Amino acid sequence: MNAKPRWIDEEYRGIVRTGFRLKKRVFKGRSPFQAVEVVETAGHGKLLLIDGMTMVSERDEFVYHEMIAHVPLFLHPRPRRVLVIGGGDGGSVREVLRHRSVERCVLAEIDPLVVEASRRYLPSTAAKLSDKRCEVKIGDGVAFVRETSERFDVVIVDSTEPFGPAKELFGSAFYKDVRRVLTEDGIVVSQAGSPFYEIATIKNLARLLKPIFPVVDAYLFTNLTYPGGLWAFTYASKGLRPLRDFKPARVSAARLPLRWYNADVHTGAFALPQFLKDALGRR
Amino acid sequence: MNAKPRWIDEEYRGIVRTGFRLKKRVFKGRSPFQAVEVVETAGHGKLLLIDGMTMVSERDEFVYHEMIAHVPLFLHPRPRRVLVIGGGDGGSVREVLRHRSVERCVLAEIDPLVVEASRRYLPSTAAKLSDKRCEVKIGDGVAFVRETSERFDVVIVDSTEPFGPAKELFGSAFYKDVRRVLTEDGIVVSQAGSPFYEIATIKNLARLLKPIFPVVDAYLFTNLTYPGGLWAFTYASKGLRPLRDFKPARVSAARLPLRWYNADVHTGAFALPQFLKDALGRR
Figure 1 (cartoon, each protein chain N blue to C red):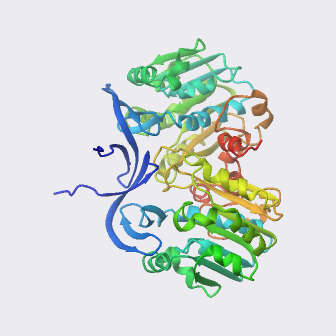
Figure 2 (cartoon, rainbow over the protein chains, first blue to last red):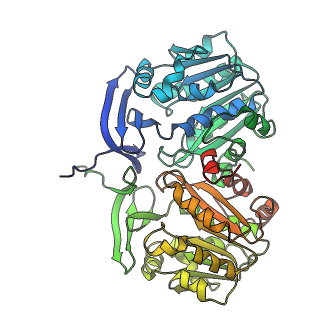
Figure 3 (cartoon, chains in turn orange, red):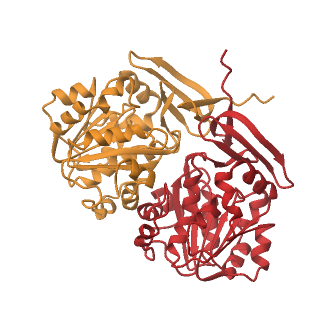
């Protein structure tokens, strides 16, 4: 007898859903912030879900994490100190630490349960959280950037959607504090949602960044396991322009074992489709 | 009482699925070739499904059709005669006919039911099939290119997956015939599947194109409603190189009302992620 296949589906805005063939449920917990779940799938390894939304799929998390980390880190001429806000799964930290110039990476994650579940069930994503160059600070990232006296060359805002615990990460006060903690020529990149299904997220982020940073842009990639596939980051910097200040030769010289990002992909990611250019008021 | 929401799900390789919230089923038919279905969804307008696979979603079909048509048509300096094989929904023909240089567009579609259902239920996609510059030939596209004495500047292979009626469209004999019907500097682009989930499709296509055409490449875009999101086309030409022979000024001069394609997107689409470069043996 064949059992009926079971699926774990993520609904998005009530109109579309992405489902993964379920092998078994591995972990389910609830923190003061959110529901955290790990499941094993037939084709994507383990998934980490927060409030029912897929955050990490073992099979293709490399795409998201390479794009959020290497775009700013290959643009900055010598990134030494990096701050990751959110990203308790450790994938962004893992990619950051591939850069030998990086001396220190601080992860500010509000929810210890995300870190614990990732360390335990997603070691290929989370392992570098134990690297001696990484410090995991459990606490509110917004308060951290408001209060810290540290300075960073790159800040990565690896957040969930703009509600719940992540809401303040989509506000102007937070980005003014980010500017303060950034060194000269510092860069901040931020998860900015699905521009096709929810264009307001990236429009609002771009609008609030513009008075704060002289360089503001957006870049895209295909997220294989997020609904809608097309996913965006905002890019902002005190001085570095994402294409004109990019040195492709640095990418080949670094010889990192990457599967998605390369110098062509860097440039291509800033080629925005026309509907998005129009929405962001760009030529 | 709220009825339980109904979904229409497309399974892909038994491991992932994409679902659309169903409003109502509009049409279901079966031709000698395949099952053809039209449904109305809550968030994506109508969908055309063939053998259960989403071919067209009214909300975002522009992405696929702009990318399959405008990449070759803006590369060719003066496309006058275009052949579309498959694509009975009419979306590719609609984009082709936006180019004023095009005098004639032949659509060779094997299944009259696809054309009929699209004309009736998807008029925004199919309307240009009635344009006086378009001739719809119901019949086997493989036989058409083998037997025709016509010549074309661009051939667009807008096929379903490499099985069923489309199988021969993924073969070497077919592409030798395509070369024969192409004018000097002619271009052929072909739907090449999901490089992430099914890399064999694009690898095989690229391998069989190489001995037939001096220029062979691949380009990508995010298909918002195909499973996996990342979708590929192969590009082959008797002489035109997809980046070095591209004139961005032609795109702005044409002033077409496009929502996805623009000159930056053209270039960015040929920036292949590292895993795909590696698979295709490219630097």
